[in-house]
Image (cartoon, rainbow, N blue to C red; front, top):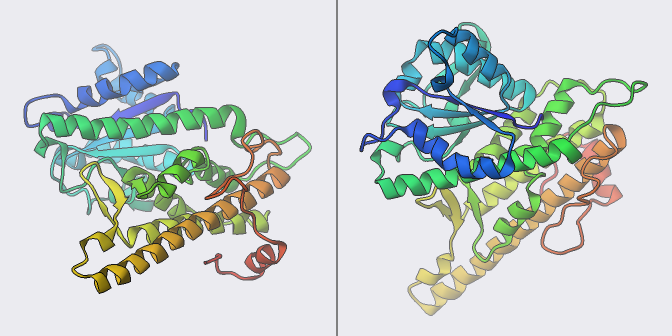
Length: 370
């Protein structure tokens, strides 16, 4: 995936107010600015930058095509806008499918966010279609920005743009050292399916932020932002839908397996977790509220089993990440995460599949499970 130099903000003017009259667009840009100032050489683009004499449609399309990330400020007017639905979302969704463009949604007002479905790259005939609810959202549909107090808005926006900033920083670092590079002239070109999904494995699959991702999972109480969870699920969805070229069967198997192990990790944590007011998935010590000693010991035993399960799931995900990285270094890019080294789980020693485990993965059509 290319380094993110342009962040496109898509919004409808009629949605652009919170309950106290503040501009949602300006609030997002205000929260983003300190982070982007530190990283430098990034540009936030929205239609307020179009001058009176300029061709506004041309300016919007040019900016869209040059963007590597998009922020969608979603409300009823956004979903009802013919221009957004016909001219902005098809470009954004197609760039996400082909180039790994990152999409961040923020729900401004109560609307059909969960149900609205869009066709792309042609807004009338597709052939692809997607619901925005399948992508990342910075807040829950039942907690739109215009229903929050100013304090709650600031807190939610801070978490929202912090995640965007972390992703942008990791993408920039990956672009300079870790992402797929063009092969030598004598080698066959990298197939776009491989290039796109390897890019998603770096960003949405958490390879670029593995240490931080790992620390959140291994904390005393595991926590994951819903933005990260949606990114993992988007990666898994793209892998499952991929039309594989069959050039590198082992790479294809490794990508499927890595996506599966990440999704399994989220499922295991989600067994005893709930979403807090920040829109983070937070584990809980459910044995604490037991009514008697017998109940306490029973629930505590279940808690320990659950802890072991998500620790094991993280180890499996690290194994899958290390196998995938080895294959990419062998077949595609010898410098892929070379300086960072292998991915760890609960111990300093990076976990790796045995040769028999790899053989089982290659022979069977099903991804590896615990």
